[in-house]
Length: 295
Image 1 (cartoon, rainbow, N blue to C red):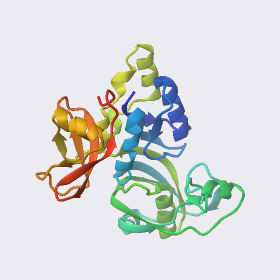
Image 2 (cartoon, rainbow, N blue to C red):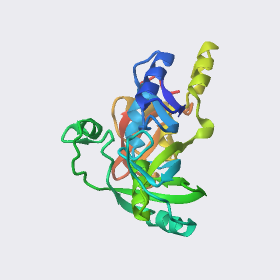
Image 3 (cartoon, rainbow, N blue to C red):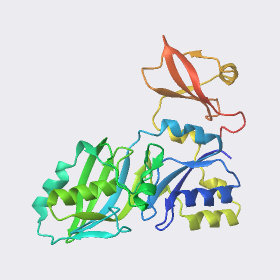
């Protein structure tokens, strides 16, 4: 079992709940995902199965895209619809003010993570502290909002199409926009439409996966491990080179341009290794896929 599975997570389920379901369906414990979705949220959850879990390290900085509904005038303890209401204010803003506020939260920004988050501070998850009524200072983190567009404005609900860096909290963005407008806000609904280059169009619902399992076609839902590496340059290896890499040896590939990693494939197009440059055209294997599990 080795590959990538793109799941359309339903609302009301944690990301770990989905991991457990995928483990049961595929009969393997070796399952992980590349970015948590809050229980309320729906959409793209990229899963890695088997040896492909080792490729997660090459996916940490990739962009994500969301469709978020921000409800103005109501602030909550969690910055989303699941928290307690902490403030209610009239919404006396128009489309021009909203466009200006959205524009102020584009580009490179500093964002304070919400207390109700899985982020750890001094070894403790923030949401564990929040549930005890403890609020601590959180250091702002640098994130990037590459694109944020108003899709719909039907007071009090504002729908945004957001493209952002990994690690961006859309809940915090909703809260900050509400503060900027002076009326407060919370994230009312959220769908992740794209993650690491994988879109909703290529995702599977849990119902579809169950149906595939019943008909013995579950493996058809898996993408090849090399899909995790996106547009990383490819080098095709001869059998002798494959054998060398499996023994941990480096290769000289002077014709490869400067790039963080390359995909080393065998003659059948299966991923053998992810390689990093050590200088002077020499590349060493960073991750080697086990023989017989590369397709």
